[in-house]
Length: 440
Image (cartoon, rainbow, N blue to C red; front, side, top):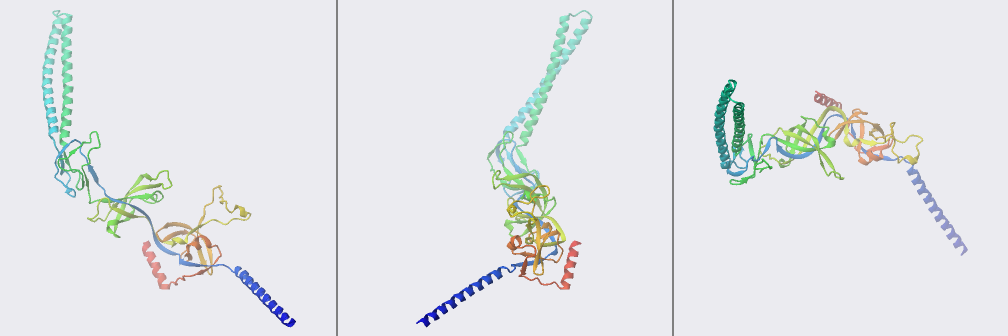
């Protein structure tokens, strides 16, 4: 019995020591494994000499370059409407005639008043000549002592009154002539002609309808005429991008109604006044209007169609470039003497302003990466120019995003998961020739 108990005790000790040994082994494995260097899997791309075109994208609508709203200057009933919506008209062609009866009467009345005023002027002139002759006769008699002072004064007064009446009548004639001119102009305005070779893009009135003139009000918008042979896209560009655009920049416009077909255009106007939406709110947006003349036209293009424009603001050939996601911003590391408690405080430059992060890329050298500070230039949708800090054919990290933006540090070990195929000498020569040709 005692022997059996001793055996049990010995087996229990063996189990306990075995478990302790296993626990120590696990701890050692974890400890030793934690001391191993972290290896980050990355994708890489080579820096290459490329042609990069910087593009500013914007949305807007298509409009005719020349478009006019036709409103009458006189009030009346439409008695003639020889055009329909969609008609093509020539400059000077009749568009609308407003009933002219009342304006004909006004013109005839003004003409009659003018004739009457001219007749009155003749009477005033004859009376003036008579009073002038009488005044001269009295002056002669007065010198000979045959007329009294009162007779002379009376003759002079009659002469001056006749002269004043004559001058007043001439002023009346001028007023009546202006009234006649106004009446004739109002009569002429009852017939409205096309101001340009155009298409009736919109017709808002019908025959027999009464319209209001624009003398004292805005007037009735009767129709819109537009020259559809010259069209433009009017797009809204963000305030941060509008400074990149210049007049005569090339643009490619995609009109929704035409699918993926592209229309070539050129920038003709850049707005000076901002158009702000959501003023004073978190959704405030500041845009500027940019006009792009379409160089390619299609008969199906209509005013008001929606469009997207890609404006090519700058092109550089044969510049060092990398995938746009390879460039990230990093703050400089804390210098010596800076405590941990200051890590949340922004670093200051020599002028005392918060230090800005630097643009960097990570270059693969063997099994580690080296962080290089770079200066960037223009970019397109895929690549960005590196103006300083990098040369052609360097292997830069292009992914994943988390590694580039946070995980990678100078000297960190990496594992490349997409080995690039080495270029053959023939491929290298072909690439060099292509760049040289583009530069020319």
